[in-house]
Image (tube, rainbow, N blue to C red; front, top):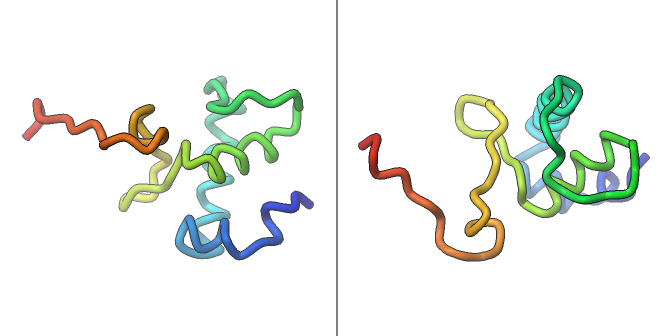
Length: 87
């Protein structure tokens, strides 16, 4: 088991164990279907890659329980990118 999953911090970050499980499962499906990992790691362990994406705030579940990626500026601590075209 990955050490990050033993800590409550990741559970709280996502919003609960059910949401964490859902996020991990859905992201694993995306990666297995050909989606590019959002973190650079020297491992073939997809679970470790997904957990690092969560720890580094690269992915999250939206209100519709879909996996979303953080915009680069938001992940770096900058202001979020707003899509004003679709208002």
